[in-house]
Image (tube, rainbow, N blue to C red; front, side, top):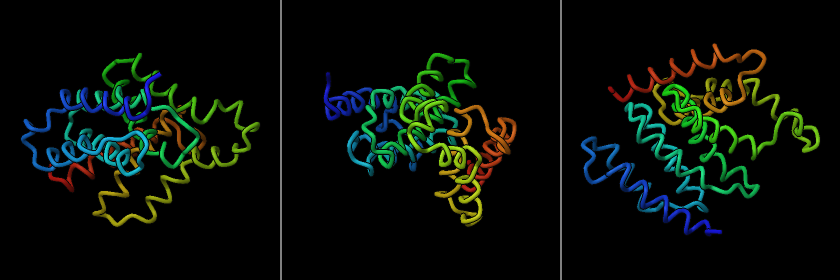
Length: 200
């Protein structure tokens, strides 16, 4: 079995071809691609966060093919119980699943969803793990609503984080006050807001 460093090296090679940072005409994307690939690691939180930020920016720039390429590579990430480090991976996979669904790539969407479900467990396993209340709160939109209440109107960071969280909620099919229709509406509104801030 390949080590995490070997998997990261393989991902770097694949993404260098798929993202082609040297040929990127958009200055902000070129910088983000270069930094994400130069320091790519599957064991460092900072490196995974850079991939998360890049994936969100690819979504905003309508680079669906490149976004899916990042998601495919992160399917190789092996969850080791560290949810802090898994957070950026989870965001990338959730956004990839959402994009793949929109493009009728059901196999990739399901692979991403299965990766996240394997980390958290199915709902019927939450009681045994002792975190049903925490998951019920999260799927009930607590984190999205906290982000909404604390973000400045022009803040890219908080609003970008909301996209990842909304995509995560969508993976579970909606819940309570956050059915899929509301998730989709909020996701589209946040996407439009961020594109307006970035003048895309």
